[in-house]
Image 1 (cartoon, rainbow, N blue to C red):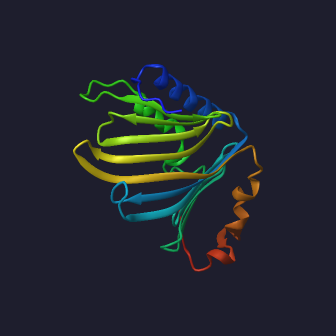
Image 2: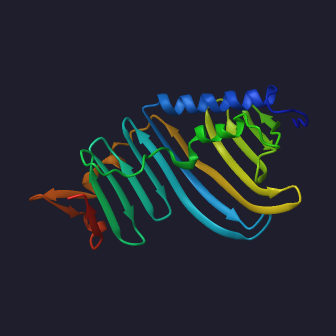
Image 3: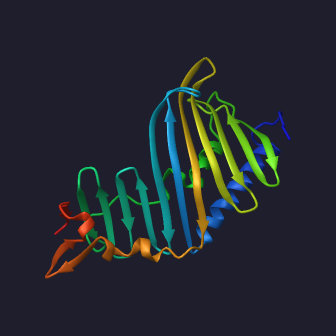
Length: 225
């Protein structure tokens, strides 16, 4: 069913906010969350592909992990790691150190970041939300009137509280801009992710020195020590 009329703050805007809030609450209350995303950026909508990468984000209890292209970042209650596979380097920080990697969250794939599009502001832009499709709880919303963007499309499953796809079309009504697609190829709640946060798969400590596992042999180690 195609619906063509709505304004931000109306029923559709409230419904999208409600749907995102439920997804956010599910992510926060779950024992674990695992998300895989295929990121594709184009010169414009219908234009040539300029960037493509696989990304993932996961959390379990007090541990979080982000992977984007060649960069892997892990935070556990005792250690923080940042691995640059392209540069073949690893940063290992103990949590009692005064140094700290920037706070890790569920990256740009965290639905809480989408709420910024509903913040009230005093700009000249008037945001509009439309529900463009709804098939048994699988919904697609369109948001326009965002500064610097022609349209944001959010597809989600309101029954399972999961994101399906987000597209960002940058530019203005008179000028096309870059087009970015986030395809959520995996969105899983409450799966055992303990193996993903087993730091023994990255390094061990022998006689006060960090020793990397075979898959990281040759990587340069940086620490606060």
